[in-house]
Length: 231
Image (tube, rainbow, N blue to C red; front, side, top):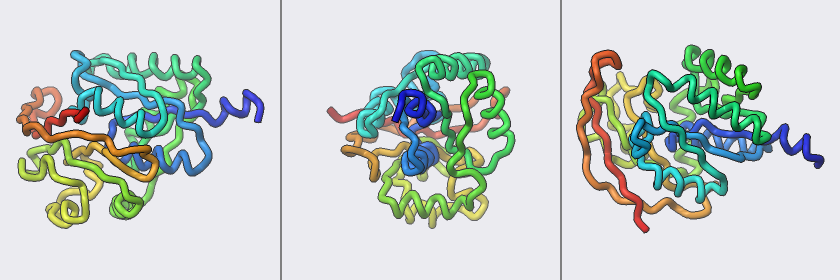
């Protein structure tokens, strides 16, 4: 295979550390893509992932287990798009040609991803697109992936759901109004083991923290399971 062919198959993953991005990565690997890089948005301090609240040490441990590199970019929600495009352009300059996302069926998300990737000359890949949400959850679990619920939106779920294993029992306990994938923002996960992990990511649960989002971001009460890497 020549160098241009190698580059045409290289990809990055927009990486949250959660189940959807992880399953999308798995499917991309199975399709023959080479995952060269994970990219993750951190908050302004760089101490927590922008959406899921996971520390960078655990996200870096995921990348090691998956045999790839990870790039962190610090941003507020106000600067998110500009910094994301800058990160994509750097990836293109490094020879990456595809950007993989774990979105399932929210068209507004896909439209935004296609817009920003076009500005970096990257091809968008959505391996989970337009598939039944519960079917994807069942596939994720049947493949042997393991995850913990690290964030819960209090509008949809009580605090007791935070910190639980993402498994069949968790899915069975969800209210009928809550999506099994949490695609509407009801909850987020952290994947710590799976068929493409060289070894599990060792961590411990520390405490559950309450977070009230500002009015301009909906004003919802969130619960975050604080995790710490075990070394």
